Length: 578
Image (cartoon, rainbow, N blue to C red):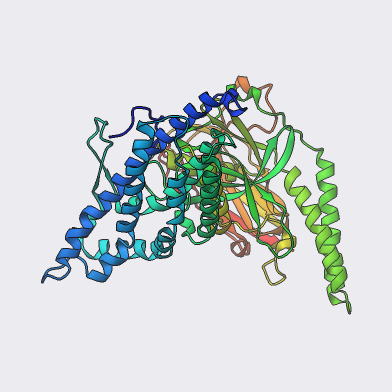
């Protein structure tokens, strides 16, 4: 039976270590500190009971599957059973023995009780976990293939019953086999975390202190060794619902932090958004990230304009400073091309590239002006700056799509957060800061010259609205709004018939956005960069398609208007004058 003193439960139902009062953290009296140690142990024991029940839920189908493997109608072969459930029996026995030994120590607690030797023994048996981790990826792949090939096994693997704690009213919960197979890896991080808490509340002259220290050392060394071996797309573990956490979108954004601009790499996972700083590393070492903050998507909201008054003020540089930097970059590009043709000019080319990288990075940091605000419902707000409203809408749409699912809030332990942040290097889909100096010479340089665009008309809207279009092109690694039609008022079939000449500077894409003009008196005193109009549709054309005439550009439409894809925006006639 679980002890009476239990730590509070986290969002996934597992007990978590309580946060002690500051007086204890600062070294309160020994007696109260040891009572806190008992509370930490009680919480860990309660979570250990849940973990044992999870392992038992895995073992329950293993035995009949193994028994039927030698019959005329096997569900799985012996080899498949042994691969999927590899080392689960041994891990179960290790933790059952640990639980049975720790329980009486807590039930008969006094200040002389030592438990460090039990954690030492547990840490010394981590070799079994090493074998489990080495087989983990193969086990998942085998289970997935067997589920696809056998409906009976698929039903078993999706409906494993985990018993609740003995003193819990909840009898069982249904969990997938995939989620349970991750529990042993997850458990190592939790065990390491609880050792930190136990050491906080154990006096240095207590006989338990050196034993707990040794157990922590062994656990940390083991954790460091397996972090690189875990399949990165399943790292960090699982969501509170027991599903694998997946990366959905990532990219570089400019964050306004303490009234200054910071370049961040932002990662949207299935259940949280993580904002990371790129750490400086020595030559030869791969890029590393440091997590600045994260928000569970269940807690994330997009700030309304009324809420944005407390947001950091946006410092916008004069346009002439931005243009001057673009001229400097253009001059450097010309110099690089000249030096490439010169004998022994490579060293100078490298120096010029380095200088150009610095200037393009400066431009990338200082050019964005469109605010993208997100808010944690518990009170904290964050603000990014984006150069393109097209991109802002894509970030928002990606997050809102995930939020339509039944998300639960999540709280990552320090170790889990470290593992997730470390995995970002392997998971990222955007590898480099979007500056041209990072690109190889053979990569397409984009188009230079002038693009003539005629925006004709749009049809298919079922309601009248005030409609207009904007055109964006990319240059120097980011997108810029280059043109805007007039607002065609109170119509479902606007006819703009407007022509624009757009300068291209290594451009590879043309983006077209169609807006409904929303007149809002509350915005009259707001920042000029605020965009309150609704995007009714958007589309993108690659530079290869910009040559020639009468290129048709479809734009996805807003569902509320029920406009058809092909009808949202009229044809766009394009040709390039070099």
